[in-house]
Length: 251
Image 1 (cartoon, one colour):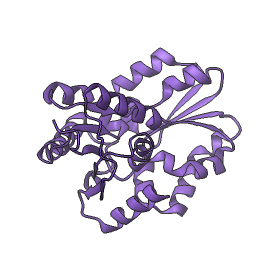
Image 2 (tube, rainbow, N blue to C red):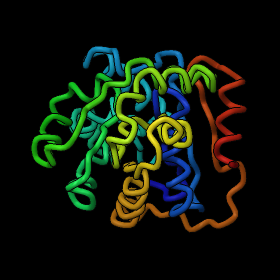
Image 3 (cartoon, rainbow, N blue to C red):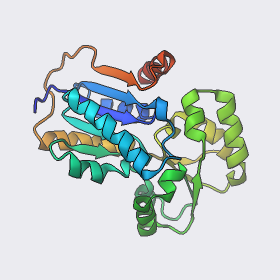
C-alpha cells in the first residue's frame, strides 16, 4: 500500500468535518477523501442492516479510490466497525466512539448529559460502554432529529430545538458528552441553553489513534507539498453542502 494514497473519511453528512479538523491538526501532510452521505442522512433512525449496507457501499467506493485507511466519523455507523474489519481485512479502520469513558476518567463526580442519536444510545456496544463506566449521575438523551437540523444549517431551528429539549437541564449539568459528530458544531448554542458546561468529544483521541495506526503500518505520508489535499464527495451532489464543508474546514 502506498503511503501517499488518501485517507477515506465518511459520515452521514458534513458533521464529520469536526473529526477531520482534529485529524488535520496532527496529520497535516496527508491526502483526504471525505464522503458525506447526506442522501441517506440521518443514520440514527435506520436499522442495523441498512446502516451496514450503506457503510459497505462507501467502503467499496474508498477501495476503488485506493484509500490506505478508512475513518468512520459517525458514532451511529461506528458500531459496524468490527463487521467491516472482518470483511475487509487488508485495510485499517479507525472508528469514532462517544467519549463517555473520559467522564469516568476526568469528571466522575459531576452531573453528565450524553447527547447522541437514538441509534447510538440504543446500540449494544454503547450500552456496554455505559454500564462499564457509569458514574450514576448521567442522563442519556436521544436527540431525535437534531443531526438533521444541524445538517440543514438553520440556526433558528437549532436554537428552538435546544431550548425545547435542554431547558429542563439548565443549571443541573456540568458535563456534556457530544455523542454525534454533528454536535460539536453547535457548542455555543448548547451553552446558551445549559450555561457553562464542559464538553467531551472523541474526535481528538481518534486523531491521535489514527496517527499511531499509520505509523505502525508504515503509512505516514512524507510529502509536505500536497495540493488539493481534501476531496469532498456528497451522495446527493449538493453544492451548498460542499461550500459549507470547506467554510467549516477553514474556520
